[in-house]
Amino acid sequence: MDSVANRVLLIPCSGIGKVHGLIAREGVLRAVEQAFGGEVQTMCLPLLVVGDEEARRLVAQHPVITVDGCPKLCAYKNTELAGGKIARSLRVLDVLKEHKGAQPGTATTLSDEGWKVVDALSSELMGEVQALTGSGEVA
Amino acid sequence: MPERFAVLPCNGLDKAVGPLARETALIVVEDCEGSLICPVLYQNTPARYEKPLAESPLIVIDGCGTRCASRIAATHGLRIARKLTVAEALREAGVAPGQSLRPGPEMLEVCRRLAGQLLTEGPSAPEPPPPVADFSGPVEYATVRHDKFVFRVPVRSGYYFNENDCWARVAGGRARVGISDFRQQQLGDLTFCDLPRIGATVEQFGELGSVESVKAVSDILSPFSGRVVAANEQVAEAPETINEDPYEAGWVAELELSDFAGEVDLLLDGEGYLEVVKRKAAEYRP
Image 1 (cartoon, each protein chain N blue to C red):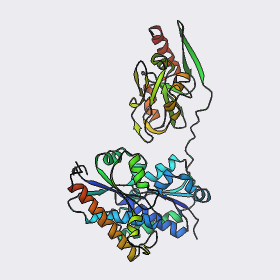
Image 2: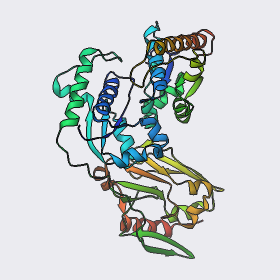
Image 3: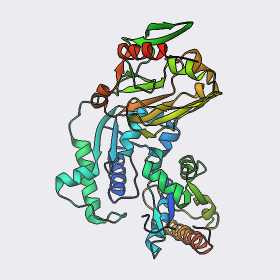
């Protein structure tokens, strides 16, 4: 991973058992799949939570975009606690505001509307990644 | 209907086995109408899951050898009824997990089989609860007197010392660490104590933190290797606690030990350190 010095880390909340958590996770996965040139990488939030030294080193050395499903902001708070460089913090609720009335699905299965929200989230994520990697903000 | 369980998965994302652990957990919960525990939310807000954990036996599902879910369960002293590490199960079954973070139909079928095995295996003996580390027992002290100075050393009380005047009091697989009475008298009134981070690991004789007085800064070198599970905020707020009670209230950090048997021979017990203090006291010039 460190072979790409300016790689951006995308860290979603754990969010298991919640539809907004599922959207956060799927949005990050979609962004990683769509990215080319290896400019993004995801990271396992539980690794940070249990104090994994390598995970802590990576979030301190690479810019991080956190994606949270709910106001508890688990991804943001735990990344910050681990000493991470949080460049941007996205919330699924902010993306949902642009899709008023959408019924995204359940905690295990997204509806078509839910996948549209995922697409919107991943587009926003890639926009932020490009802003970070293209603007000189990333060393 | 199978027995109802609370399920704590690692919910990992950076290896293929993480999503498999997640999918297996979701199937288990659906099939037994159990409760799903978010590992990160539980670590941050354990009270949220008190009810399901009190009502149902716990299944822990890890993806890889890092075993984040098991570690979170251990941190909170949870009793695990059944556990699964997906990477190990796949290895035993001769199945390769692949690289994708999205399990395909074949891997989802594997997850269904793993979930079924977890739910249908006979009631296993619950894992013994983690040993309780009790540091409240009485401490027996010997004293070394030299000139007007009196130095205390705990003896026959489970304390071990390194040559840097740092002690570890061992109980139930854990140890509390601090500096000796001799060291705190050498330093004088302490003004600052730098605590280690919870979750940090330390090698034997590695730096665990430091204390500072008007005279000097002194590193705390850990007598044992382990993982920091607690830090004594009281000594950070009131470093003089270490001066007043260096061996009990003045503990600095608590470790989960990683290799007590392999490391203890490199340390001194109380009686051994007593001889060291006698020698140092004879040369002591404040």
